[in-house]
Length: 288
Length: 333
Image 1 (cartoon, rainbow over the protein chains, first blue to last red):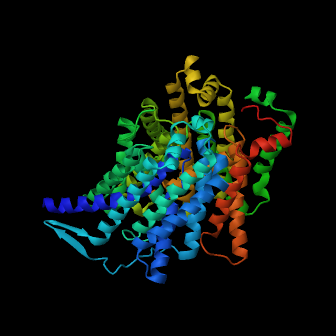
Image 2 (image 1 turned 180 degrees about the vertical axis):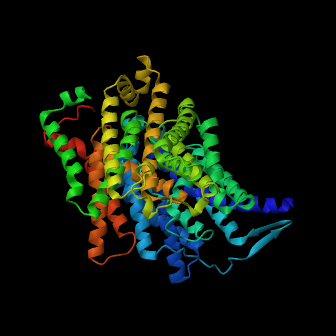
Image 3 (image 1 turned 45 degrees about the vertical axis):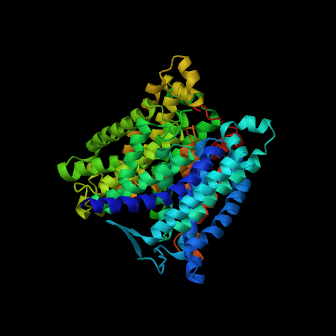
């Protein structure tokens, strides 16, 4: 009996790591640029469709599509921040909100026009394979996706900890005025950060398509999911995004198994409310 | 009220009187379609005004106002269907229920120092939580929805809000005008000035002895209660309620667009915003239909573009620009 719960929980952990990667992008953007990316999930869905298109056209495995998609989304993010969002840095939150809601609405509906409302599955040749480890049976695609998510997150950690540019971006997050005073090009660094955030989303979208079918309506749901994860994990904490992702992944999986799949996000929202009330800075966040 | 009229600039008085007279007399000349669009405008002007009170004046960003619309609509509809109590009495229960929700969210948020985006997320979380809850609530018909019976023989029972288009047209007009008047009065009250003090600088406001917690609680309770009345109007106008439609986050967004586009923290902002956005949406439907583009989503894409353009070009909204253009000043600002 317990092995069933364990199986469900492990599936949740693996899915949660991919969610965590998506949320990591949001955390990085919000933590540095201080702009609320309310189109975050919509971008993830664009990446899902791109991975789907690459798969149907060239039989390209989404795990490989991850690399070109991350690169492409980096450019998209860089351009978007430089062209559209930069004037909104430091402006009231509701103005940023409207701007990105507008972007999100356009994305969802362009996808709707291009692909229709039906969900698009990617049927991998190893889609139904699984590994058996003792009582555990885990899906092969999920293991691969989780491993890839950890790899991308590790690369991002390395970038922020070990490179000069990474340190410069962290300086902007810690003290914006100070960063400007010592001569950092804040605008360029912001664009870079937004690019990196969207690169996470591009990678996460490619991985998500191996877990869930692509559909336009997923966009707003993923945006909320990313926000829940980031708040639970702690804003600005990169490890927190992954921890929050795993937590939500497990909670969704268990709730879907014990109650009804349609009720799974109810538990995520309940978790969010509990965290906001008991520990507003998030599990791994620091009080400012 | 008389005071308000006295301080209004002469040109403003003429415009307001003229606009009201035209809207009152319009059903004599306009066709059903125009009436229905105007009814929708009144609805958005009303709920937008309720949201404007909380965000525009008290500075508290709520992205879950669909919760109060839904709770208001469901409570009044259930009272009528299950207990036979008509909406004119049911509205009081609806307001009380929604205000209780608002008070709970406000208490959790303000007591624990949750502000800005965090508070907005708390409001979204509550709305979504309630949406999924209602999806699984048998009393309200769950995801299959709740329907209000509409029979030919009951048309004219205005006490049950069973009426034709005109009933809802004038009711909507009264709500929109009443809400604008209420906000104008409140803005000039002691509470209104305290709201703006908290909005501008909460620390400074507290240093002046303003009880920021109480003031913000007042804003969220009044705003949620007002929004519930809009919910009752919605329920009895459309005669159906689906959790996935009334509580949906896109509904919360739809509801805040008019005040933001029109001008936050102004009395006429939500009204002007509703008059700009609703016909725009309708016009886009007509234009895309005429060119034979019936793909779902084309209209929404234009809508998104318009939002981006407006918020980039006129971040403080349309009304302040208009007012400056015509030499009017929003005195109740």
